[in-house]
Image (cartoon, rainbow, N blue to C red; front, top):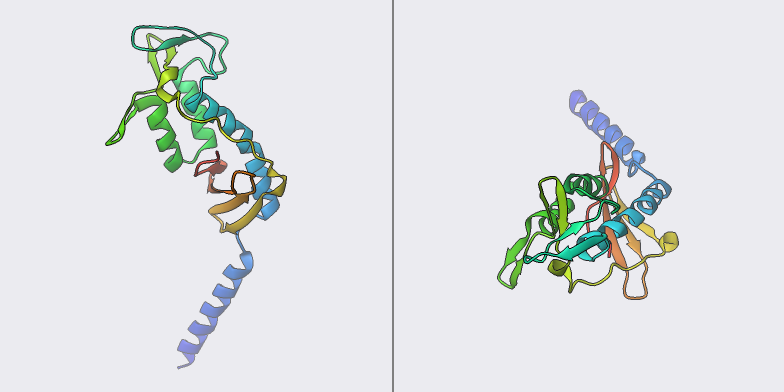
Length: 180
């Protein structure tokens, strides 16, 4: 009986200790990380869904050679930037549009970016009907849920609040849901 009480007491102490640890990162750290990631995410959304890379004229397939002075001039460089900002689960969704294309019952979207002989090409028509990413004022953002591995932040916007999920990785926080 004494062993059971000791085990129960030890389990209770461990539970209280874990609860006292809270969510790992504090709200200020999470919001600071989001503030650093959001502009980079917006830039990447404009590249993936918009037509913000400088390029030449389209070939017969709709692809245009990206100019040497573009922010990204290789698929690998764009891929690395996306992986730095977006957590893998969400990155895969963006990468399908950017690099592989998507086929569904509603239609097909080809790859937005391809590389031939070390030269990057973009097809702006692939995403021409996608809207511009919204701009957010992060000063009113609030962490609404968190644990040591993820956080959900609500960002007020006149068009409707957005809840964005951040995922903690070994490299730091990354975005794991749409921020547009």
